Length: 565
Image (cartoon, rainbow, N blue to C red; front, side, top):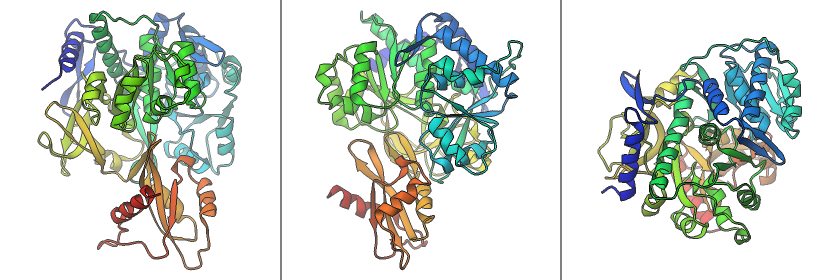
């Protein structure tokens, strides 16, 4: 039976999306059917930026240390970057332009400028090492790459990186950091016309195949994904106002997640334009500093991986800070332990728990579990996000399963990506004929439409919200000449939810120890992918009848060893 909150949320969303409503729906034909879209949404990101930066012109958008930039100032800087890209760098519509940088005002302005110039903003994982960065840049054939100092050094060490790499001193104030780029600005430069179905972004995702794939989304998918989150925010605002509790503080949020992640890009950065929300940047996660900034900047909304709210919840100095301005402590990327859900409600100064479920390929859109509903069903990631999302449970053949049955979770909406760059085979394998994206997660829908994730079909580990391909880590282990066999799997971890573990069998006379093997891995893969626990097996690893390594038995054995300490 639907809860009272569910009924009120449904009624409010129905009013918002009805003809004449603030978020009235239209439809677009795709996958042979009519999919809902929010009619008021601008068709492209440049129009989206222009509209909301004008509407909120004098409000603060970016706070980074002592630097504060308004919406108007940010848009003006992005316009100059866009003209410089066209006139000074020769960027044409559809060219991929990479960003390999930590979060900064420069990152945000470069991202906007690339899109306004008609380029495809290619968001490179800032934690990658040289080989990973070079492979992604080559895969999507970037025309130009912007990199901060550390990432630029990694790219200088790479062989065969073809596009020019522009180093951005992102620790400087915005005008100084972007001075070399804006020096190429030409006022007479003409920015190209962009359509809703033109490519906008490429984000990289690790699946079971090892190699990161570039997920391409068009402008309409990204904007509609942003409006999907906006719809949820307006729904909850309407309910709060109806209850006599309208917000009294200006919207403000911490930017805790890296902007190359889809949640940070869509749900945090892009949604902030529409609601006039202040973004408070953190150069590096630190729970105490986060609490200090929440108090100092009167942050009203917090979102991060579950680890972040847990570290604030359990921090010995938490009582020293006023966190009461936060209405919601949201999380995504991994499940929260049920006890954490209850403790956030009871101990965090009035902020309510919230969790969302979405993927890079869905532009972070999927499902959400809110407040008292989350407390009632803390193991669920919630219902499909109205008004754009459908969730189905599919069997191995791709047919829908009955309510309550366990199968592969699939998501359909206009917000879904269009495919993997230059990889038609992988695209076809994950999108059904009628437009559902097969997530690789296993779950079921209960009688109230709440989604429960119980397993995953993909061979990946999710460490603090970051996907790690087991096959990729295995490939890095096999690259060492002493390694004969390797198996990588997930281990439970209180802080990160899950971390990679590995067991290896060495060749005769292998003679490599754990420290040396870890040092070897650090040269080839990002630090977060390196196994937290590494075991050496004196005998060959067990095999199935197919001659594949029996990872299930290995995982069970070594998880038990890890749990025993």
